[in-house]
Length: 337
Image (cartoon, rainbow, N blue to C red; front, side):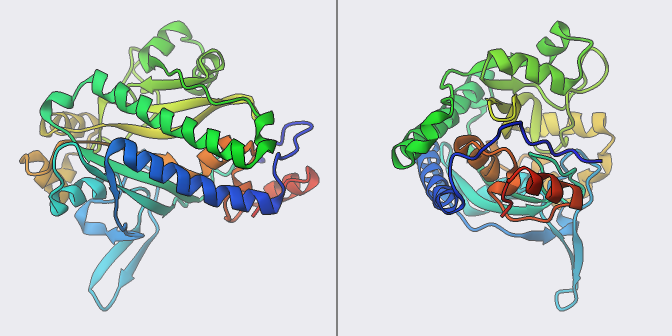
């Protein structure tokens, strides 16, 4: 079933060559701005990790990792889904102090992703993680970090528009962030699906941080799935913006204050994942060896789509698509990389 839709009358602001130049400039600008604002250092990141360590991100817990054996090492490896847990281990190994952190240029394969305007089996994002003190495990600290990230997005947008004036035809990203919880959205629109609630809220609040993802709401269901072993479900959320090209809420980043030993213990039990307690990462965390952190992932292709006014993620990244998507884009004159 085709899930790709191209808006009627859509025409990209930039031609193919200018799009390629703008992608390169955007990525350089944003990662430099983000790194400076959050006190992050760039580090090298793995494309795959050893399966037995438990370092791979389990996402919603049902996605299959791309796995392969390494005969010379006698190990089984998995291509990463993201680096949510690897980053925290790296901060411990590299001995980062409180208030400083790292970011990586992360590339992943998510083989079970459903293909549409926003989703590809190839994932590229800035994965970042920062050491915090116990006093920083608060909603206020989380919200201030969100504002810093949004400010970096706005500064990047401003520079891009000065270099590519064609982009001034697009609505600007709102620097004012609205904070709302998933429970507040369910209370307001109990008959709507989670995605419909997001659309309804973000249309009127074009830059939103939606808080509290992973735990069950009053309805007994979570707003969305979130693995139990990286975000604290009470101190996390998604940065959502209104995408004027697609006319819908658009997730740019998933982030949060990470689990403490106490919240990991609780969430593993709730999620029925007690078997993970024996994995290296989880044992170190439960015994309090790993530092307290905040972190997240910011979609590179997503941010490029948003700031360059693109209708399909394939316009800003090279991937593999089904025949129906290829045909729909070809008929609409949309060039996929």
